[in-house]
Length: 224
Image (cartoon, rainbow, N blue to C red; front, side, top):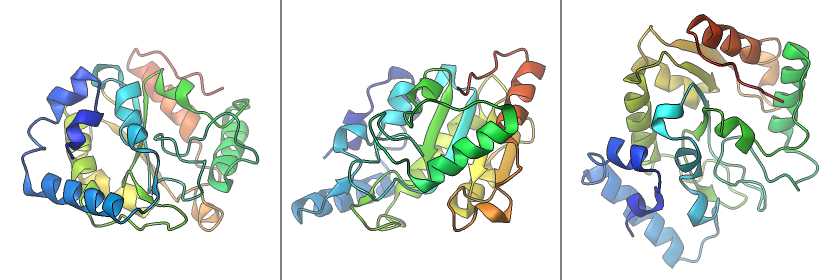
C-alpha cells in the first residue's frame, strides 16, 4: 500500500516526497496494511485519511488547528480534525464545546458540524494521528503517524506567510517545539469535556487568530 497515492494535492505531494522512502513511512504503511488484513474497521475511510491536506493546499494555509486523533464513533470522522458530516446529530461533545467557545468568543456559530468551509479558507484541520480502530481511541498512536505529522509541521514552519497554530491538548502541544517564534502559537487544553475546564474555556482562539491574520495583512477567517 502506497500512502502517498492518497494525497491528491500537488503542493503537498511535493512537500512530503522526501518522507515516503523513510523507514518510519514504511513501518506506518505496513501497520495499516496489517490492520486491513485483520479486517479491523479503520476510521476515517481510507479515501479520507489525507482529506485535510487535499482540501487545503500548502500555499493557502493560514491557520493550523491540531487535535489528537479522529472520532472513534463510526459515522463521525471524515478526515478533518473535529469535523463531522453535516448530517451528524447530535454533535460530538468536543465539537459542541468548540462551537460554544466560538460563540462566546465572537458571537458566531456554524449551522452544522461540517468544517470543510474552514478548510476552504485556509484552515488546515489536522490530527496528530490520522487513523484509529472504530470505537478505540488512541489505538493507532505510536505507529508512525506522529512522524508524518511532524514532517507536515516542519513544512508549515517554512511557509512564506506567518501562520497561526492552534494546538489543543498535550499531543498537539508537543509540536510547538518545531514552530518558530515568527508564527503565532495558541495552546490550550483539548475541548473534550474531560479537559476543557483546564483552560480551553475562555481561551478565545478564534478572535486571536483573526486579529493576528489582520496584523499580517491577511484575510480573516469567517468562522461561521
